Image 1: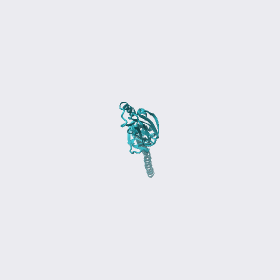
Image 2: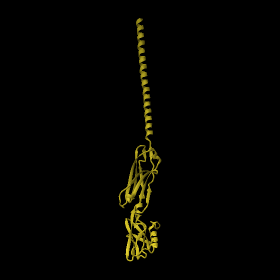
Image 3: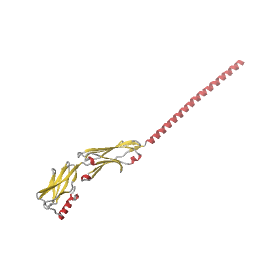
Image 4: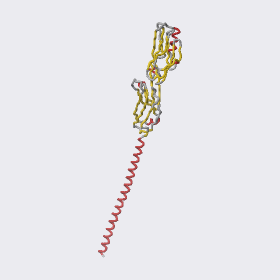
Length: 274
């Protein structure tokens, strides 16, 4: 957090100008009571006091620290190498009385990588496909939301539980029926880590987009029906032609056979009369 983003320090200095306070009763103020820092990062801490002439002042912490700036009633420190949740104490001593104020620091692991897959990428319209989104090494998990998108439209949102500071993998899956218009959009996954309640901001990371190919089964079924119908009609036509040819030959042979018997009978009768 930058010093310009801290309102507590200038407000405290203005209060000191108009209401200087007393050595018996004084306050110690910090820029904020809660900070959120990425794992391994650093932050700036401002400490101020209403004591007109403090004897000593500073910060108590096990972290590495550097004094950046100071005045009669304020000090600004930078702390380094924050790897776990911790508390830093701002303190001032006035007339041998010490007062302190804590700054609670929470560590987070941002969603640096968001991986999304669509399976299968070629699907028949009306059948289902699965969208899977995965974020490795993210914390705190309870502040994370994964949103599956079709274009700019939200299809599915999932939040998580678990108040551990240890980085974990977050994953969500969504089963969807394929529609014709799905082919005209890209699918993506957005990870959102909301750290506003801890003094931070919202961190958003989006996966690479992926398209989907839709195959319409009605056209293929109609084509199959046409092919089968034509094949059946062709088979019936060929069969009918063959049957007509066979029966025609048999009928022709029968007629020729009866005529031959009649001719032989006539010849026999003529020979008998003679």
